Length: 299
Image 1 (cartoon, helix red, strand yellow):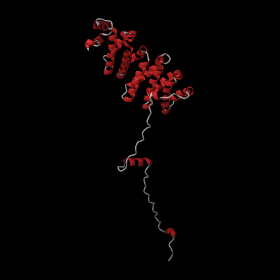
Image 2 (cartoon, helix red, strand yellow):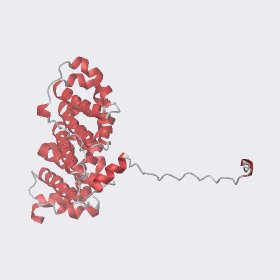
Image 3 (tube, rainbow, N blue to C red):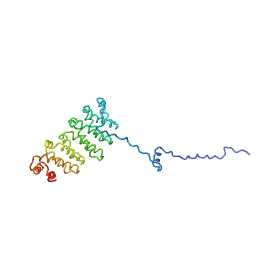
Image 4 (tube, helix red, strand yellow):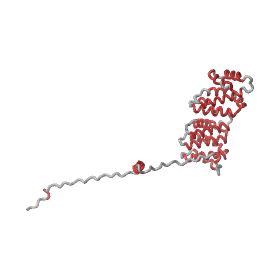
């Protein structure tokens, strides 16, 4: 029997290779997620930021080589690395406390850096810059409001009033301390001119903080200081604040008005009559009645 030609044989059907089942390889992110979501495994603790060490003024030491270090201070303050800025702020405080004569030529730049740092979202920079403000106030006092540094001081004052008005307690308390230090070392007449513009500010909290600083200024001046500044300007400030929305502003206004009353009626036999005549002569009609209530017999 003849063999069949291979050419005439039926074609052989080739089987397609079977698809291999895909095996999902978990990524690191998936593994981490599974580990966290696994009820039988404890979640990994979240790493906390390094604790910030806030140094009190009393614990700041002198700089070993201040003449050389002052040259790099401003550069460090203007760094984009917040850690360098933080360290430089503390160095600025050290200069203010121990080497103020070296810092004085750069104090305007330093105040502008403090303003910038207070606007930073990092709480460490905000609080340290406020602490630096207190040290600079104590070091330079009235020198800060001279014409050459007046604009920088104005910006710094506004930021301190804003920070003192915040809800963050540790920032608010630090700003209050800085404002108090400012009032302690700067002459009241010069400072009142700076603070007076804020009693009409749109932010009621800023008005209240400004009023409290003015009240502290007036109480520090005493009777003779009130007479020196003038009864009328202080009475107008007080009268405007007596109708403020916030109780802190109203309380500060009453304190200011009481100081004015005591100074104005010091040598008057008819104190209440003299006070009434003063208020009617120098205040708008809507302000007279609230101011008359400041008299002791009306309280």
